Image 1 (cartoon, rainbow, N blue to C red):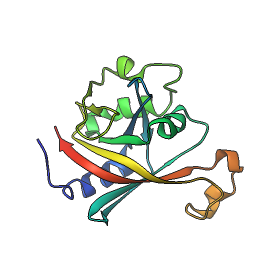
Image 2: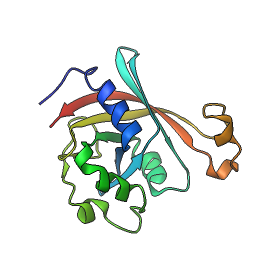
Image 3: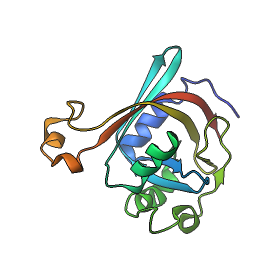
Image 4: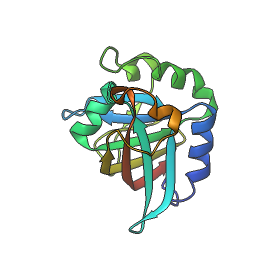
Length: 165
């Protein structure tokens, strides 16, 4: 079921604050990866499209996949997936297939290469249009105290589509 592109904003942001949301990426062969993120911005308009902004550390496997494919899905879980969200935030997709371990079901996305997640209430399909590597002034002063290699890269993306389970 497709929903209005702005209907998802409050739900996604609230869930990011409560338990996190899932960020889905893939490699050139379509092999998916999922990680938990807790930092997310969603805006209503960028050249008539909603915008999503995420932060990912360069040390992660997801960072390499974002650079490789340039697209991602923000999958908004329901509270009953809290243990799954926690697990996805503590393991690297380079070492384990988190979809297999957690029994999450990847499903074909309509607008981007990375899959959506069937069990998630909302899937937000995004294409990156700008990557801001550190050093930058976009995060808090406490975040900027970390060594540059540990600071988050900020990805700005246009929202191409939103679907609801």
